Length: 108
Image 1 (cartoon, rainbow, N blue to C red):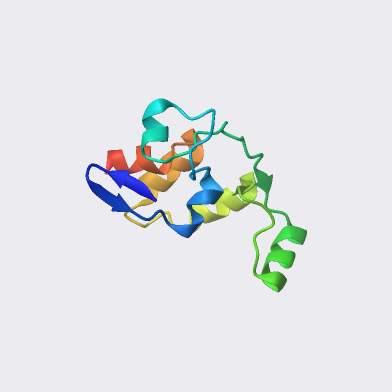
Image 2 (cartoon, rainbow, N blue to C red):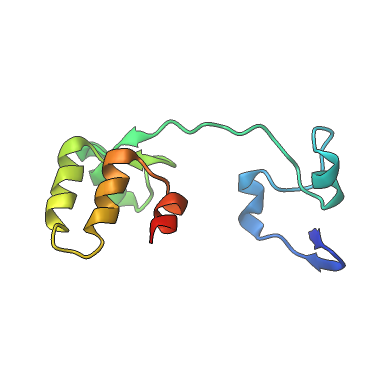
């Protein structure tokens, strides 16, 4: 549960996967006061979509990793396919400059 002012709100069941939960000894006072655990951020190594990973994903329905990226050829094929789309400049900026979703939304 999390407190917002006088209101008490249940956290989403998946919040534990992102490090939110009961306070711990490493929590900051502000985070501890609302019941959030502040842990060390873990970097996730991105995996490249390969033919074998795509086949495994299609068979099982589960992604082979948390972060997956396209290779140069796949990204080029996608950009060629959406060349006449009104969102093409946004897709191209994401592909070439690696902007985050929030940064791209700020451009719209």
